[in-house]
Length: 257
Image (cartoon, rainbow, N blue to C red; front, top):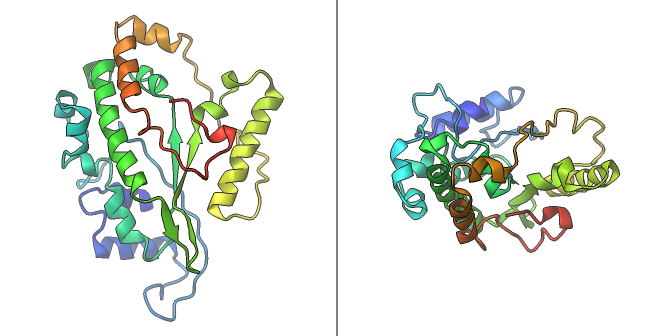
């Protein structure tokens, strides 16, 4: 239910939709909107790629636009349709944060890996890189403007943290023990960030699937003559993406660009 509401990008902040969504997520608390409401924690996790390649059946969903590949990243970052694809994080946060605890976990994947995984998007990797760059500007500006939040007790805490996909992959480490230690460190700081009670999770990585692509990033992009150009796109985002916080100082939080 949250997914349908969150990615109905044209009316994500409609008050009636917000109320119906929260009441649907907390079905045992029909008095949620009254002063006598009972409060109990429910955890709902939702996510998406920016930009999103997935289909969405909602008539209010803002679809991926072909003309974005003809713009510069800066042009995309100021485009009205891009700003609400696959949703407007600003409008979502403003609409829901008065009623629920909203936190963001930024899952960052190395730039070249991302582009090489979808070499046919936007008619080729260079145009795909342009579109991805535009959306990273959109995300970075939202995150930079929303570093902290105030919890129910008035304390100031981080609104978002980052998870580096490269720090979760076996190819990054020499041994299985090193990989397991890194993954446990990631779980530990996520648990602390989310305010949960334990980081014990015996089956957390059972569903993790390593890439099955046999060719390297260099082979996939270099064959099309785009490797150097896309590396330049990545380098232009230095200091902007991946986003950084002073609090995120652990080695597993230092993402490969």
